[in-house]
Image 1 (cartoon, rainbow, N blue to C red):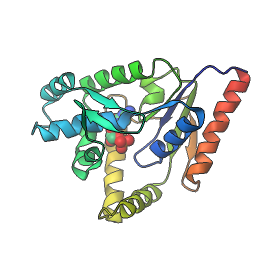
Image 2: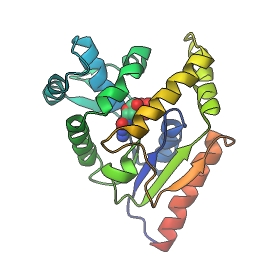
Image 3: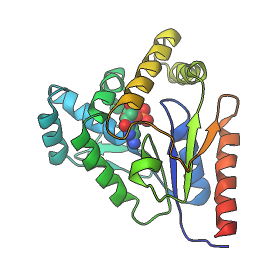
Length: 224
Ligand code: DC
């Protein structure tokens, strides 16, 4: 049995519960958690803030090279030291982030930054391409899925709890569109890695999903 720190990759479509589960797994193992979607969102936020044309790829990459994006272990997100944790979840950012995430030079740079953050292992990272391109050698790879209806309903309830106005039908359409853009983009599309374990969370709660992943970690360590 080995107790070396591992890299755990959690991928899947929008609103499949990745970040909630990833945070819990990281806490249980005392690993760091890295939300890679927050990095794409931060760049999108800053581009919108500066009034850049989202389709102008060269100005977007130039912006990326001029800013620092940092995440702390309390899940606070900063651009150039400004806390933008709340702002990156806005509808405006959500509706533009897939376009930014489809720019290959942006992906190359952010994947590199993510690999640096994960270099020491002991990490749970969630996103769309962690198992396929950021950490292809992660010891544990999980691909979370859930029906579109279930994912829209989870986001809807989350919004209502936070007191944010929410339209279930619109959420479902937005999620479908994001799935389509994330899966059909040319550069590292959303795709299950061949060696990832798929978990359908439609009828599982957060605790059950967390326990399944912790079980995979335990099995891996027993064999190692
Ligand atoms: O997980 P999220 O909703 O915060 O991700 C925001 C967007 O960023 C999503 O539309 C896809 C993109 N993304 C990506 O392309 N690759 C990642 N590793 C993480 C997110």
